[in-house]
Amino acid sequence: MSTLKFEDGAVQFRQRLVVSLLSHRTILIRNVRSDSLDCPGIQEHEANFLRLLDKMTNGSRIEINNTGTQIRFRPGVLLGGNIHHTCSGDRSIGWYLEGILPLAPFGKEDVSIQLEGITDGCCDKDPSPDYLKCSILPYFEKFGIGAIADEAPPPEIRIIQRGAAPDGVRGKVEFYCPRIKELKPIDMTDMGMIKRVRGTVTSCRLPPSSAARVAHAAKGLLHRLIPDVWIHTNPSTTKQCGGLTSPGLSLILTAESTTGILLSAECCFDPKQERGSELPEDLGQRGAAMLLEEVRRAGCVDTSAQSLILLLMCLGPEDIARVRIGTLSHYTIESLRLFKQALGVEFKVRPDHDTQTILLSCLGTGFQNMAKAST
Image (cartoon, rainbow, N blue to C red; front, side, top):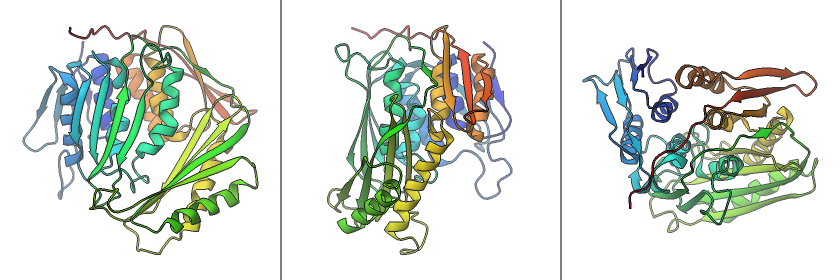
């Protein structure tokens, strides 16, 4: 098959590599920060992600020129199995985990990965493992991944040890996902009504009262609209965080509807801001407002999970799959163009003026996992 060529640098770096592996097409990326005088070429976290893909596959070939501004990636075969990887301190574990989630079900064996690095404090640019656990994994079962408990356990993300940015590089996260032969088509068009809200406040090297203040402020805003709100506090001591970590405070909220739709939102203290610039009460109200904004958009998938859900729809059987989206993000729009170029899947986009939402439907490629585990 022809080589996929991109001239716009590191845009959608992980997404393009993932699509290359799933479509078995070589990818060529040029002009990776070629205009940058301070730091041209690929950065440490991008090279680290390439090393992770190399561990997950057999036969992949990675070619990088001397300046790091051009990358050629020839995909190999996804293996699965037990993998241990140390992530770069530039990005959180969630950035790596989000990138490999679409690949996990299609290996020769069930995949079990342990990642070490930062777990909290980067939710302004990277999803946290808690968000992926609450938002993405429930959709995996809707696609048939781990849906039958007798055949294999369901996908799971376990936070073994936390580490807050920028010094908490000793965090540990375990991810398990069973292999699957093919996905199921989904039809998520009925949002329903919100019936409950659940959440967790996580703190590192901070008094437990800080987490309680965040939870109280978030519930104060949410109780105006719904009575069934429960927010758990999970304070972690310095010893539980591996000794060396920065102070951190984060909030993850999930709203569940009467039709089983889950919408999540998260926020955290920015480690780059001065200490005390944002109170715990402000963080709690900000997180609750972000969740209410997701609910207002009336989509069946929250904004950060859109591109991943649409990619799994592309890999589904040759049947119609439909989903209701509130507002398409710019990243999702670029992903739709990538899916059309690499996988040949074109979505039908139909606006619903009554609910101010968008209905997206496509015909899957019938992707099947033909790999067999060696005995």
